[in-house]
Length: 407
Ligand SMILES: *[C@@H]1O[C@H](CO)[C@@H](O)[C@H](O)[C@H]1NC(C)=O
Ligand SMILES: *[C@@H]1O[C@H](CO)[C@@H](O)[C@H](O)[C@H]1NC(C)=O
Ligand SMILES: *[C@@H]1O[C@H](CO)[C@@H](O)[C@H](O)[C@H]1NC(C)=O
Ligand SMILES: *[C@@H]1O[C@H](CO)[C@@H](O)[C@H](O)[C@H]1NC(C)=O
Image 1 (tube, rainbow, N blue to C red):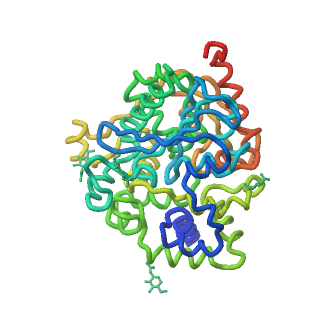
Image 2 (image 1 turned 90 degrees about the vertical axis):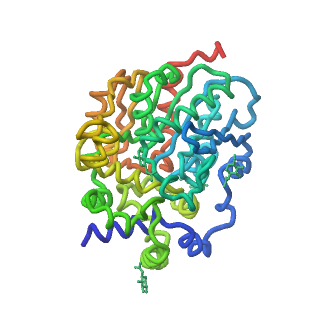
Image 3 (image 1 turned 180 degrees about the vertical axis):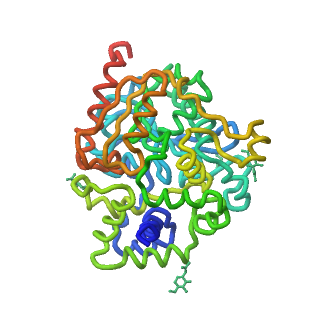
């Protein structure tokens, strides 16, 4: 019962679409409705929109802050930042200047590129497929495809425009998964990355503590039920279901506290780090879209305890992989220096799973336990102390890899 209740809460908070937007609009200042480039401009930073087409035809919208506020244009090291599941480039700017990771990096002297994964609100586009009309083909991807198609295309593009040979990579949550996929499947990309930083690393997930994901994992083999709850192609529960859930959890007085508490219930709980003022904006930008298959792939890992390609079932695996089981990702091939930032109150990225990953990955440089025992999965994006506890540490580590005088 408890788990079912938490599941509903999760759905209400993360998976809602326009239905929830409409309900909340009563409370939300119009400004929160701006798109990422408009928000960046509003804060007085330079911003560029870029479009990259992947080998399999997806059109990704990248956002770039080429230099910091009051700085001059000029070549500088690139940092590429990749969001997690159901999120977008908005994760890194919502907290505002001096707080959001994108602004902090730009002001520290970097050329900042913000990725948007296929299927999210900025990258819901394809050269020949329509996300609605051709749903079964368009949404036929997991984070595996993001790793082997989206990231290489985006990295090559950013290096080309920024006229650099290498870049720094920062990933959060699924943004770390896709990096391990790319660097193990396409090892030639390791030489294009000076160092990579994983915030809340996700490769092995069989020790995660999130009731919602554990619940989903129960239905890995009951596809029809899975689809009926979360949508068959695009991850999108029915409007009626959503409407009922938001009515239940977000409309009660005081609605803000109600929703915020449920959010913590889902992802771990750290009220000390959560800035309540940001909640309405967060609700507008998240969820930003995903494919149901991304979640199926993670639930497979919860059950198998492995980090491996999508499981098509016995016959499907023989057809796709010529073996009974999906191939494992070879983490030893991830060979540029890797830094792993983790915490002990993260319901998705558990310490046990992070330490296992750290042991297996090629070229581990350091693991960094965040110095707040209650630090959770969401705090990497919006935590009140994200700058001192996380971002400044990353900047210091980056400086040990880069010689600014050569640029
Ligand atoms: C999809 O990409 C094409 C080609 O870049 C563009 O003309 C079109 O406006 C885009 N559609 C959406 C919905 O972004
Ligand atoms: C989805 O992709 C898999 C391979 O990853 C393929 O076997 C299958 O036919 C595809 N399905 C659709 C509907 O495109
Ligand atoms: C939503 O609530 C209405 C009325 O309370 C009910 O008729 C409907 O079946 C519910 N829909 C879902 C998907 O739970
Ligand atoms: C909370 O967010 C608001 C809006 O961005 C900001 O003005 C305020 O300084 C933040 N508070 C803290 C404690 O970071």
